Length: 248
Image 1 (cartoon, helix red, strand yellow):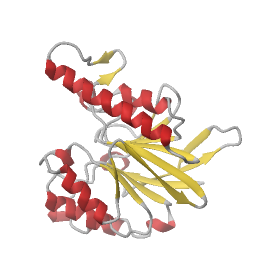
Image 2 (cartoon, one colour):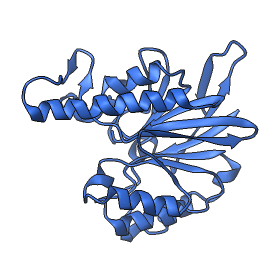
Image 3 (cartoon, rainbow, N blue to C red):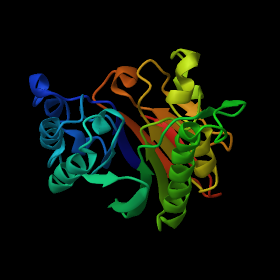
Image 4 (cartoon, rainbow, N blue to C red):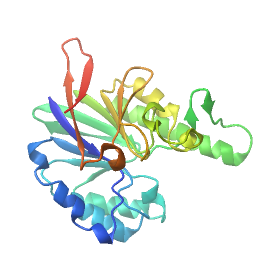
């Protein structure tokens, strides 16, 4: 079994420097890798990016992250990604990576994602150029996500995004803002790609557990939702080839 630790929405700043790192003590005894589902910073500044990098540097397990909307706020997201990479953190944006965990190839693909809503109540790329651009951004990302997931040469596949692929894990948030919290297009990419687990953040008032229309387990690991330093999920692939993911 592969033990996947996951968390999102750390929102680090100078006042809590070192605080989250303390909570990661001993993680190597409990998990094989750590996934961070975006919003590492509060305002997306380079200074906050350096703090996030120090919180996650050298914790004893591979760390894979995506950026969130907060990390984009100051328009230095590329610089923040570089700072994280220099600290040994793998940053995904429509890309994937494979790590070895106890002889098992664990593939993770993902990126920030975007909004648009869910089946029956979603935006469409029709009308004004602003609306076409909004939906077009999500469509382009979903296509890259699917290609990245499909290209993973791995025994286990995990999708990591900031925005949600399903509305199940948004329960608790005002329904009016669902279109700004995720998109069904992400779920379509996941369901077409033989994924074992999908992890996201962003929805602070949401619900931890959900499932895609195709039956893939989805977990909202925003820190206010899981209310602990990280959640750990055990991944096993059964003899019949069907994936299983359970909370530990």
